[in-house]
Image (cartoon, rainbow, N blue to C red; front, side, top):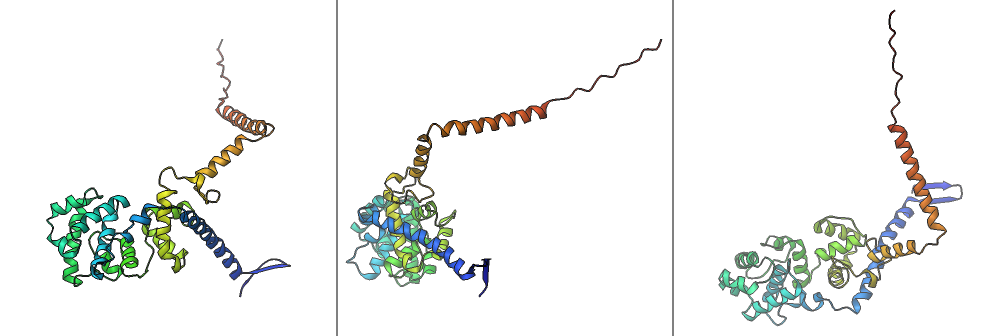
Length: 299
């Protein structure tokens, strides 16, 4: 094993350095997850009572239950949990099954789904999906990520959640807008798309955390770490989160509370810098006039 020798009395191994760096990253997200879990214990978020895992009929036949899970997730995109839950109730009141979806004229299905986000497009997707399930999957839903992602309107996030809820299999992390936003805000990763976030988190987190992380962060994002005006002042992560507005406010307040002996000194230095810069600029802008040549007059 190679050694990095920093002095005659200090020697560390490459493996030790790598382990220390890994521990630093792991400690960061584990600490944040522990704090978020503590906050979520006393918090009832919309996802807890109206999330997609709550919307399928538990008494329905297994294949019908699985189809209802798929439908709930297809409708959930760009839709609040409350709106999605209400639409699922209306569908179940009409009898939510593959056969029933195929019987609906598209305009009637649109009226039931409204005001779900993009309800007209989703009505078409539901009928296309129902036909595919009858033709290719014997009236059941696919039991693989590839099969689910091949359905109209189904992406990686939905597919992973369907696998977890309907098939009780965890093959990846379901990354929605909350998971993407919060994991970047907390500084665990630095990504610009949900798909990149999924890949980064699957490297960072152990597989035992893949399934619970979505539910944990979605509820946290709905109640505290919201897209606009997050409630940083009541968050346990506020002093370590790089995006915390409360930490920034505390720093500004501490600057304002600084003693009078410190402030003039700081201002004096800034003024001196400005004066020096101005002098340099003046010196550079001065034009030196050349002496005019005098013409000699011949007598």
